[in-house]
Image 1 (cartoon, rainbow, N blue to C red):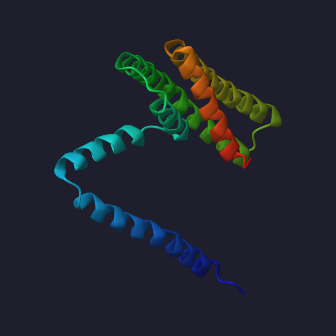
Image 2: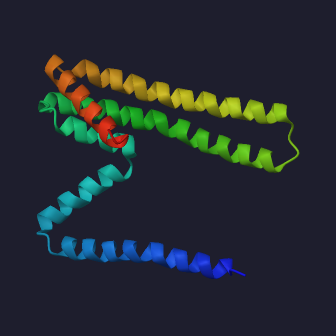
Length: 164
């Protein structure tokens, strides 16, 4: 019979090994950077640590649009406000998910589960609406040419994401 504890420990070790190798290599590269580049790298990493994949994708797209300094400043202000607004919703969503898990493991009725599910869906919709409004606000700052280029870049990303 297969000992699942051994399988779990072995799998965990195999997953950690590449990560630790990457971390050691990254640390060596970091230590070989000039001090000014280390500061810049840390600032960039800190900025992106709070950003999800969507935010990072948007960041890459915006970098390719030849924004003016004024546009960059306006967009950063919009994105910062959006992050602040979304944080509370994300925390509520996490709480809702935990409540849903508790209800599933309890004697809760189907009606209670449906109600909890609907509440969670409502929060997801609010987050989606928040993202959409942020996109619209950023769009208003872009020129027609920048909008066209942004649409092309997003389409390219979708093509890579879905393998077309």
